Structures are given as C-alpha cells and as structure tokens.
Length: 223
Image (cartoon, rainbow, N blue to C red; front, side, top):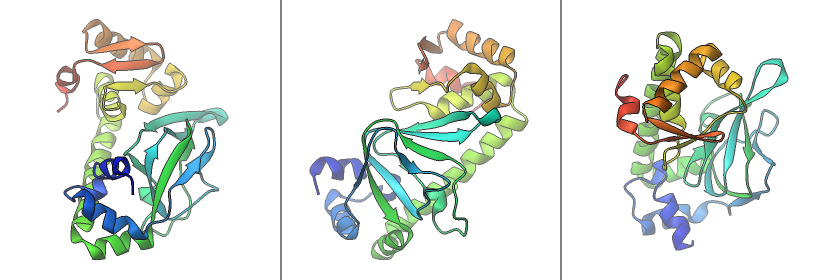
C-alpha cells in the first residue's frame, strides 16, 4: 500500500491510534479501491451496498431529494472522509440520500463482514467505531435541538460549523431558498442571519461559497 494512502487512512476515525504498519496489516484483506468518474453514483436508493466507503481521492456530494422534485446538497466529502456507515449492521437496504462523484474519485469500501474481521483482529478498531457512533448520536441530538428550539442565527451557525471543510470553506446548496428549507426557516430570516455574520466579519462570501474566518465567534453563542 502506498505511503500516501496509509497516511490518509491514519486520519480516518476507524484507524485512530494505529501505526501505519498496523493499518497496512489490517487492510491486507480489503479489496482494491474502486474508481468513479465525475457525475457517477457511489450510493443511491437503487445502488445499495452494505459497506462503508472511505474517500481516497476526489470529491463527493451528498444529495437529498427536495420539494417539487428538486434536490438539495446536504454535504460534500473530501479525501479521508467516509460515507455509507448507516448501511452497516442494520436491516434496512436502502439509502435516504444519494452520493455522487463531484470529480473523478477513488473509494476504498469496507464491507460489514470486513469491518467485523478488523474489529476481531484489533479491538481498537471496535472502540473507534463505537466512539464514532456515539459522536453521531450527539451530533444528531444537537441538530434536532437546533431545528426545533434554536433561533434562526443558531441554525445557520450550526450548519456552517458542521459543513465546512478543514480550511473553513462551506459550499452553499443550489439556492438560498433550498438552504432555508433545509434549516426550516424563512428566507428573510436566513438573509438577516447571514448578513449579520458577514457584517460582523465572522464569515466572508466568495461566490457560492462562504469562508468561516472566525470559528470562535461563530460558535460563541451556542456552545
């Protein structure tokens, strides 16, 4: 396995705390990475696989059906991030979202059976998986609270914090209307909340992207 791939896998939650040599040994039984051309489906309601995907290169978009037949970009994934975790260890055989390749991409898939073998081979993998799921539960609880009880400003702040990449950049969905629908708030409220962040120097707008320039102030009101 290439050194660059090992360094990337070392950043994935599943292998936290493991040395590159240990990761390489564990991954010897995994299949070769798969390649997806730009625009092709990785996961979809009709393309189900009981496997977690690790993005090695490229970029993915997580899409959810919107109102009136539209689609909303829920998230974008960069190398080192994962998708398909919800397909593991459950009875459901369909996805509620679609994952598309936004650029030519390479994915390493870890099936449920393969993940079970990794956990048996090294219990640290099992601990990392449990820790990840616990974090997702907390994340979803916070999200539910934000959507049901949070103020408009809090909803936008949480969205930006949860969807920005490591450089602080957030790519907005197709329109402000779609973003307002995602956050369950009116467009006028969304514009006011966004203007407040822009005027305050918390974020900077660059076309369809927002750049978080002051994370401490972004989170100040709701952490």
